[in-house]
Amino acid sequence: MKKEDLRIVYMGTPEFAVESLRRLVEGGYHIVGVVTMPDKPVGRHQDTLQPSAVKQYAVAHGLPVLQPEKLKDERFLAELRALRADLQIVVAFRMLPEVVWAMPQLGTFNLHASLLPQYRGAAPINWAVINGETETGVTTFFLRHEIDTGEIIRQTRIPIDDSDNAGTVHDKLMALGGQLVVDTVDQILSGDVHPVPQESMPEDNPLHPAPKIFKDTCRIDWTGKTLKQLHDFVRGLAPYPAAWTELKSADGKSGNLKIYATTKEPCVHGTPAGTIVTDGRTYLKVATDGGYLHLQELQAAGKKRMRVEDFLRGFRPTEGLRVE
Image 1 (cartoon, rainbow, N blue to C red):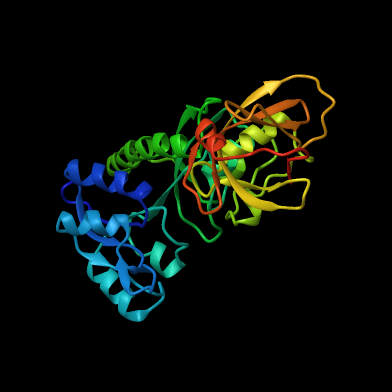
Image 2 (image 1 turned 90 degrees about the vertical axis):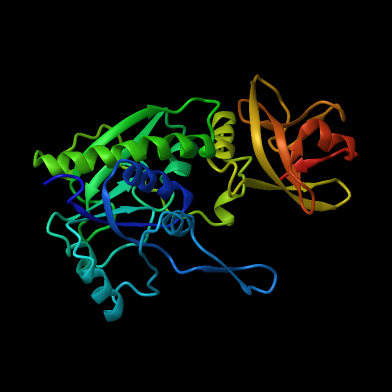
């Protein structure tokens, strides 16, 4: 079968999923339909509907779009069957019921932003950086019942640098994933597919999960982590949703502070963890186990994100200032 004859249904929602769809469209693959989330209410009164990034791309390129509220809805299933897909591709979408993923004759494969079986779950990029990994990648695998557990088709690896954060890794994996999706389709077309069960893959380290991240997940534990762990924690949550802490002064005043970028100053000191040290002009650093964590980009409640020098221009440090 030629790529022009292979009928593909593509499923995805955020910007991460647009790159793979773009590669397929520009590569001349036959996309017969796109499935994405319903438009999301936005605005102060929730009276404006915002289409997903994938829908915006699909509409701009004349691709049919389906936006089911429920994936087991009979009307949606009938519309999906009518597309007569040979293959379905899923990138950053929802968990599919079997009636959907088992529909095409060639199956349904998913692109996941980790080196499976590591980091199964909703936030693989964040958790890989938070955990200080020095390598990550993207994986394509055939869907089955348990989430992110299907047989692996292909993987591609990249290093994670100490200067990377979740945002830069996201962008690298988005581009890498786009190419991997195309390569996976070509491999399926060639008939030379030998998927590998995840259970049979050698794994030297315990499996790390990648659960969804909530606001409480993002609060910094200054006394429970080392200098490197704190630096990695901030990187893994930047630029979104961002690590945060509570800034407290000796007089009892407090306020939340988001932290977007840090640098490490390894040293031996006797300052209690969480204590802030600053010259009031050029640096703001926090005492930690193993040294000081310099805050480089931060945002006070009700203010915009800024460099530390700009933050300190309108900030008057007091004695006993600390973060908790």
